[in-house]
Length: 176
Image 1 (cartoon, rainbow, N blue to C red):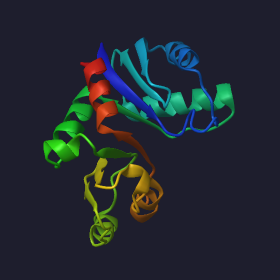
Image 2 (cartoon, rainbow, N blue to C red; image 1 turned 180 degrees about the vertical axis):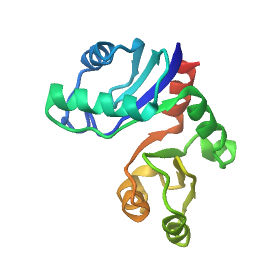
Image 3 (cartoon, rainbow, N blue to C red; image 1 turned 90 degrees about the vertical axis):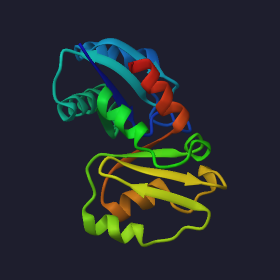
């Protein structure tokens, strides 16, 4: 069995798009996934499968949620090795890394879009763009950042969901 991590964007935020974690766990089990565990209420799921394509898993999960709840949720699925690599590749020093955010992308941005965003400067904020993730640190805190997830999505022409370092580390621990 292989370990996978599903990241769902925007569920249980501000009382909208509510899915109980117990129900989400059952939904994953109905899709045939094993040893399903959730972490906090914001759509983090670790599960096992005999193998398969992460894109196909994401599509199946997204469709099952739409069928069950009548709303769409951006769903990203990573295998354990990809999650490990994303965390290891974080370019920030330890102190910044522990306060950083990982903005995970559904598709790699083009070189042109990456270059355009890289040319922009946001005071007291640092970011590094890779094919799967924008590593982001704001010295004044993520909630006060000028470079938001919406701006990143628009400038890179991708869909994304953000997780802090603590959540990423916990998901890695759960999946290992």
